[in-house]
Length: 143
Image (cartoon, rainbow, N blue to C red; front, side):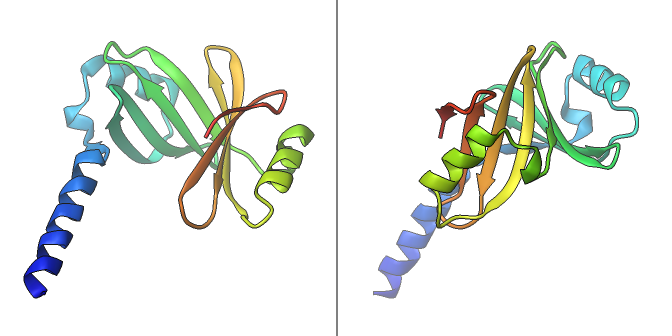
């Protein structure tokens, strides 16, 4: 019985590590990304890089707010986001969350600019971890 439990735990750990995002250090980033990020956010702090889906993603603090950005390998910024308050969410998104996820509280909200197109990412508290992506007009784009 103990052997089965140990085998299950090892298998589960391996599966989780395969799906995990790869954390990165500044020194491991391509030079164009380092250059562009430092010029765009010279006062960034608490910087954490990850590689996910072939993109270099960064979470950081700047100007007193939590922010995020994504870059390709050439250093081109693909998207950027800034944490906002629940009161700053468009009414259509607030209404959608209240009706579809009444039993869940909001954890974080980011306003995301992807090449001029504004979207909102809403992280809900609880299990399973839930991230909802909405267009500016309140349409659920992706779950």
